[in-house]
Amino acid sequence: MKTIFSRIFCTVLMLFALIGTWGTANAQDPFLQMDELESRLNKKLKLQNMNLNSIIKMYSNREPEAFGKLEEYIAKKQNAPDIGKAKKLQAEWNAKKQTELIIHHKTHAGGKWTYYAFAASDDLEKLLKDIADLHWKVNDMNDMYVKARKDAWAYIRMRNAKRANELINKAKLILSESNKQRQNTNKLFEQLLSSSHTPLDTAVLDGRGLWLRDVTSEVLLFVVEVVENGKYVRAWTTRAKGGMEVTLDGRNVVIK
View 1: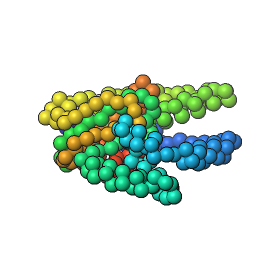
View 2: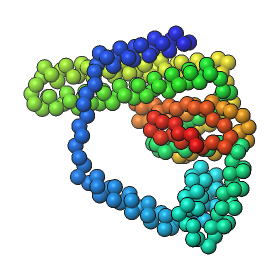
View 3: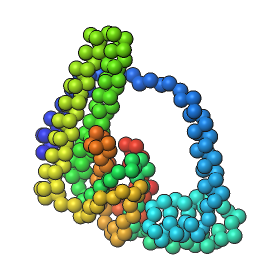
View 4: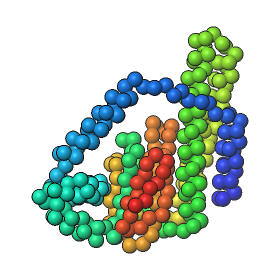
């Protein structure tokens, strides 16, 4: 299986070298500053409206953000009349949290996402990281395909048929290869699941986070999310254990 991975990596790298990269436009959005100001105002309003009872309700509903909200409340509401209760709850929650694992999916696109928990091993971790990396590389190729098509239409409007045709052919090459690589990557994961690597736990979710209890040993997490009918597949993998908070943010995995 490792040999197959090596071949796929070489194919993807060669394709990137063949295609090259296109520069991206860096035009300034005239409403960007307004959006940033609105975002800051919303944060201030949320802080003003924050109260301990709402945080306790989040915890009761097993919303992963509850811990961070309580931490923020204690840091920014030092003069609140219930600050003593808040600190006591923080100590109690942190004690329970030692056998709990929380996953924050900040970049969740609103569709379904799936998590798998495997028994941790170095070999399996390497394979899963390879699979995740290949998915992101194919995502990049799909972005390049969209860019090539857009550029082709621009040359068509400029009546430059030769350059437009070159870009259309390049776009076709990218799309064909990205589809092939996506199918190969999916098959590799299916083969992995059908072998001796049976997940300890798995679930399909539609929320922005996950709260696992009774996590008494280290596990290897693999999270995958399909976006835009399979055009993009986002995947992450990491080792984790009870007491941790794992945040999926862009391509990164942040562990606290």
